[in-house]
Image (cartoon, rainbow, N blue to C red; front, side, top):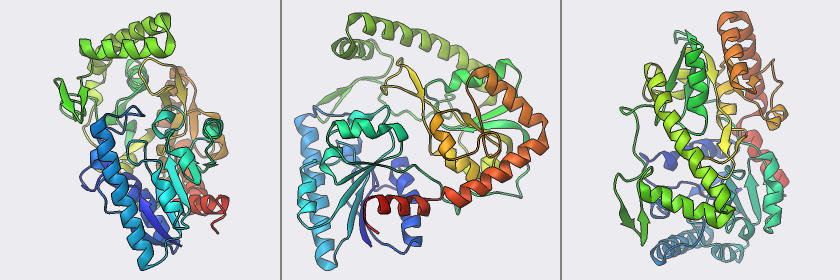
Length: 402
């Protein structure tokens, strides 16, 4: 097929959201023999407000309209040069006017939009999803939400590229655990439990310490595209949060949520001090970092509505495929969905509580043969079943494109 892709949320390769999905999708599509036309339209202007689900300002709507028309013009030109067989995007509501898909459909091109946060940030694609032919979601339980808004959901999980996530046999492995990822949800709390139990570990990524944190929000209030942006943790930020929660959940629930947020903030300061000796900055390379540690940890919980203070729920992450593909002794939070992809205890292992996390980390650090068996079995399963080529074949078959 000749596939037009709009999956880069920025054209600047220095932006994390520019390369993440391009580096996952494009090599696999090429290896399958598909011809890819990668959009050159810069989505950065819309990515700046892509965490806004709807009620865009006039300036934000203007940015989205400009990007939408540029993408449509690009598709028309590519299709005129040589027919396009599929339009594959990773758009939030902010990136593309849903009405624009009618122009692509009028060219006879089927459309698929991918999204991987459908459990806890569904609103961010709730306008886009019904407008495409197929709404590709990664979470097993997201289908009812999509069907509830009139979308046509296709469940195909994420995967990993074995050419990127692979063993590094020349790296010296330390007898400790590691986590690579940003500070979010209950990750610091779980790592603090390991610290208090004297389990050795290292942590890499954003938000764990002052030196290696990259600010993603302004330090002072500022206006952007007609919207006031306030710094997190400020009085105005808590007031805005309170107003939002009252409107959606009522006064009692909103009060409880804010009180819980303040308690979490106090606890976070203590956790930051505990974790400081374990912080290693940014990982030089994810797979290489995994190879340098005896156990690789993953944390599966997300905020149920995408906002801090809500209920924590587990779901399968991209790392659940990248870790085993790197031939690591992989220990992740349990979710029933993970059992569709691995044999628990033989190919990867899971924990359901902080106590079980502590016990199993200690076990694999002390039992090198058991850790090695998990590495080998998980690696073989990931290479056989969980590469992106398999996922695209599954996706295209489900959409009737093969």
